[in-house]
Image (cartoon, rainbow over all chains, first blue to last red; front, side, top):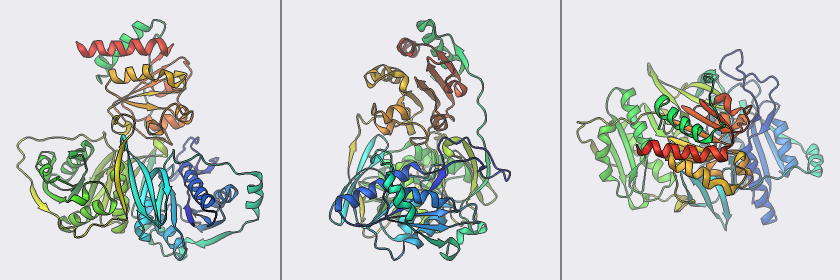
Length: 261
Length: 322
């Protein structure tokens, strides 16, 4: 069974965010980029399906500037067979719809059973691209899955909802978005890293895929301004040496001062 | 601005987060909004929506909609859109809302202001504020060139305001034709004890590595129950297998903004602080006074949590019984 795994290459979750001079994006100097953590679950799931079936290919694809290729190569090192880079050089911001359109255009004509996504890209934190892609590609989707059984031409997936799991049956081909808990992603082996260096990354130009949203004037959502959350006031410390007094004082402060209990 | 609000129900109960979205639509639109509800046996729920701001309620009441399917529920939203011709659509950013909003948006060739914490109208444009980089920054966002403007609203942030004296809403039945979804919920399994989810809770008590082991959850749970809170956890204890991922707060877990967040034995990695830093009041109990959690805490106790937490729970119960 063949999978297309759509990944985002994003600032490391350890990053301290600084606002860029334009006031609406982050300062990317000194920022380390990583494959978005949820996309690692997606890639792992695709690799395991291929291994379990003993056949098929895993293709990774991503939209972004030149550095995106580093992320794609990491995925090749972990075991992906092929990679496609959609070159978005010169496009500083592409909204979720534009991203989904670019990915759908790149996927067209491929014989994929699974379209994999992370449940969101950390950073924009929207969680929109997977279901949007599914709509554009005309396939069903199951979002935020934590368990998967693959049957003949269909799957059963568990997805996380508030305080419960939904068990969803879905026909193939389908788009799936991975939530933490689905699996434990593998690390790249030395052999994998060496093999990945020899693989070619196929390239497509965003400008040639017919994505109107690549033009800022056509974007359907945009960031007008970015700022840091307001600083919190300094902590009020309650002495901890007498646990009984500390417990009472905390409860009193929450009731009388903060008025939250 | 003309609003349409998607109303989510589960087991015949309307979700509070949807009433929050409906109240917001009334406030922003300066009058009653249209609402749409889908499910089985949901027609009777429509009349309850008037006091939260619904003028017209579009109802898709079908056996096939008893359990969620993206196709069926987006179909209902679509059918209501054709009749109400809204300029803006609000959907609560719950699991269901997050599932249906992007697919509905793509069908209309637009995108979504996802998980907004603030929303206002400027001329004919919706302008939202949403956390990005898990709350390490805030983005002011709008719908650019989109004709139809869609936002999902974060639960627990906007007030659900009931107004007395509202008359019954106009109820219109939606004709959806055949519903044959390719992806459909076949059953719902309650995880653990169907407990309140951190993303919906007003109060959260979270445990971190400082609680030393899963055998100490009962102590944390005792405080959780005293405060009628949901149980949260740091990434470290989820990765260690002490508790299920659904409890995780932080960048690879849930981003929350409750009224009260109590961090027990959590040092406060940057990813965790990002996930709970917008909480109104934060209490930190930790033995290390240098822990980063104290930089965001409103109140802090440096000391032995194994002694302080039970006393804190006892004091809370005593106050609540007064």
